[in-house]
Amino acid sequence: MKTPKISKAVVRRLPVYLRYLQLLDEMNIRTVSSYELGQKLDMNPAQIRKDLAYFGEFGRKGIGYEVGYLVEKIKQILKLDRHLNVALVGAGHLGIALSNYNRYTNEKMSIAAIFDTDREKIGTQVGNLIIQHIDELEQAVREKEIRIGMITVPAPYAQGVADRLVEAGVKGILNFAPVSLLVPSDVHLRSADVTTELQSLAYYIEES
Amino acid sequence: MKTPKISKAVVRRLPVYLRYLQLLDEMNIRTVSSYELGQKLDMNPAQIRKDLAYFGEFGRKGIGYEVGYLVEKIKQILKLDRHLNVALVGAGHLGIALSNYNRYTNEKMSIAAIFDTDREKIGTQVGNLIIQHIDELEQAVREKEIRIGMITVPAPYAQGVADRLVEAGVKGILNFAPVSLLVPSDVHLRSADVTTELQSLAYYIEES
DNA sequence: TAGATTGTTAATCGATTAACAATC
DNA sequence: TAGATTGTTAATCGATTAACAATC
Image (cartoon, rainbow over all chains, first blue to last red):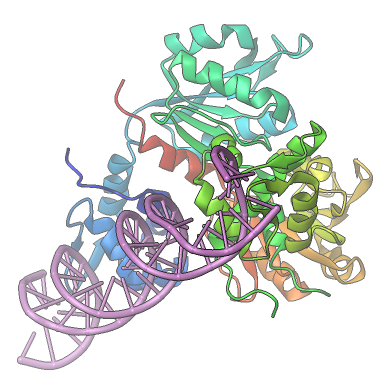
């Protein structure tokens, strides 16, 4: 165990750091301090330093962090330096839209299969993939070593899809359906539901 | 000030409770205990009771919560009992997909305008809306009393769009672009970025 | 050297959970 | 009445921030 005990909050912030560091890298900025990062990401510099320090000593006192080096380190930590295949279940508007995210994430992470139940859609090409029937899910997950599933089916079908993904061996699920899912504790579930986000935002909107 | 100090974590859970309660309501289930809710939502019952108790005494000792009543109460708390207009900026695949979310959220919350800069798209109908040029944003926000903006433009344009939304008077922003935005402290910003979600999930995926 | 900035410890703050009296 | 379940206080746990010695 190379890391002691990393909190979920820390892990959720690492991709945010990574994204901004990659931007700096593209701008050929070599070095950055936790203070500068804090300014740009609206975060406390101490938190950034502490987060990074869980994984090693990446900075230099008096200087800051070397951008390119830190990018590589964070990629390693997040395991973005190895291939990771994702399955997308639900080829509706949202599913199709998300299938474009291939480019955004990382060359090493890619959507390796898309599933639906609609006979009209099956066999159709989306990007460089062909929409498959969901009954091929288990086989595809095994053959392509898919580890993460994204669920973009209507709410009533989402739990069933989650069950199948789990059964097939997926270890992470990103659920876009507006419903609470139950999965075994060894499977990491994230909700990416627009409904709940908007509804909780509404709380903060004062009367006009 | 009718509420003392409600934490963000509590507010984010209320829509989750609401959603499940509405499901129970549709199934004509009259009453539910915090224990049952906890089971179905994979949450601690004490937390659910405590969350609800911040806003009033909605339950009955020995009985539980009356589903229909609690649904109404949570809607009131989240201000989902009044109209709330949302603007969508960016009519790409994701934007179009999200424009369907009208039905999911709430009859009272609706996307009231869609903007883009692409001349090809402007004037095009999406659902019951016509895509407008982003230069009409300020006027539309004012006229339609839009209070929340969803950003689905490419990352490099997102901060500019956020600035315009803020300037126009929007008080909540849901950002789908893979970039960290800065907004004034009185504007509530939420990130709904798939990239960071997937990347943080990757951390938990063990070697195959 | 003087100034800057890290890594880390200690202090603080916030959120979750346990426990139980009140009561339906 | 006995059993169930809330609302709430106290205890615990986890996360953030402040402070500063180490050092580039």
